[in-house]
Length: 558
Image 1 (cartoon, rainbow, N blue to C red):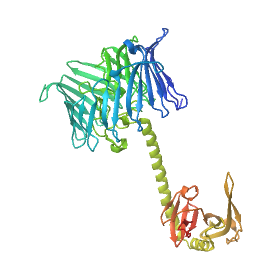
Image 2 (cartoon, helix red, strand yellow):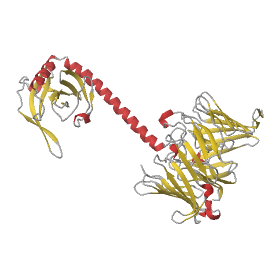
Image 3 (cartoon, helix red, strand yellow):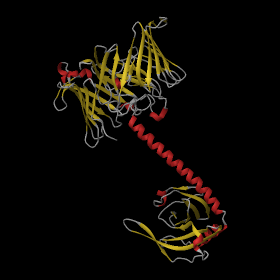
């Protein structure tokens, strides 16, 4: 159904994923992954239950199911804390349920502190020493001290070139083309869309790498979703990836996050389960047995990665490709560093993605996703994009209308009869402070057989209103100056003067928007001014004439 939320997803093998939602706000309250091949009873593989605060932020997640049966952690939960900028400041893990909490799991707690622009000041992970971050004026981390000691370096384009024993090489398009660690060198190639199509891994030591790669991986995509990975070298084979709807409930609207259904390699099928943020939780074989499972901290560092193929499976946090050699996640347009909790290069869309060009999902990875390294929140971005496009459309329409009105007005003002009618109308208008609330209106008609034959009927109209509507009642109709055969005349233009409450002077050529003049249906364009009288166009067939005065307090009225 249009605009509805996904309730259940079923695969032919027996994997079922069910979703629960909060009433009214449609926030996802539960993700339940079960194995239920008919007619067998279902087995709950993993279940994630979420609670939200008044601002719609996830304040807790409770994990249960066979994936988490591990000593005291058969059921456990995390409590999340935020600052006033919605940045995650803490995640405390406890055994037991949210309603009946047990012991705190100290090793898996996290604390974060940020400066006003989103750079980390301090962070603490479990029982490890606190890490302190030094930042420069362009929001780059220049030193990490405490639990980690590193001195990140950058090139002139803001790309990270070194950090914690690893070095990075970039091309002229700011794409990562090589990375080196203590024992591995990795090179990358990209296609015309910027998609990574090849990865080579070499062994050796810095400055003395083997001439031939240990392995070469070639990637084939459908859009931005990887559908085939071919490996040659010491190990060889092919892996195929099958995708369904991602978190956006479309094929690639969320960059594939949460949308990978299964992988097929060497005759083995692995099905993927997820939490509410599209992080891979478990890999399940064809018999419904969990063969691999993952748990993450809020920024994607792995707390648990165990089971057959845990390191060989590339899709993990946020359903993105993980390079085991560097620890980086490939998002498409950028690489993400989980330990730093940020990107290692500037945002290609610059400040459109936020004022801090290295920030990852506004430091709110519990609630937000980044689909491809450009957009911190897909749904907010789409909303802003639609609004921006609508604004541009409206502005273009207004600009076109103003241009046409100006041309049309200039044409009319060259007409002698129109000039004469305007002068007559201005002369008859008598607006003064505390005026009588009357409008002075001229209705002009054009002879359909003689365009130069234009006549105007002058009338005085009184404005009255009630709770529902405002209307004009014609008072003191003036004599019609048209010829007796009025059938030859069609309505041409109406011109009137009126007074509002407190207003402002209008310069020649200014645009008056509807809200400036008591809710008029169209923008006005001032086309001429003489003294304290202004002539403006409203639409194609209405000309308005304004007279200004200033009271003894210096306030300007129209």
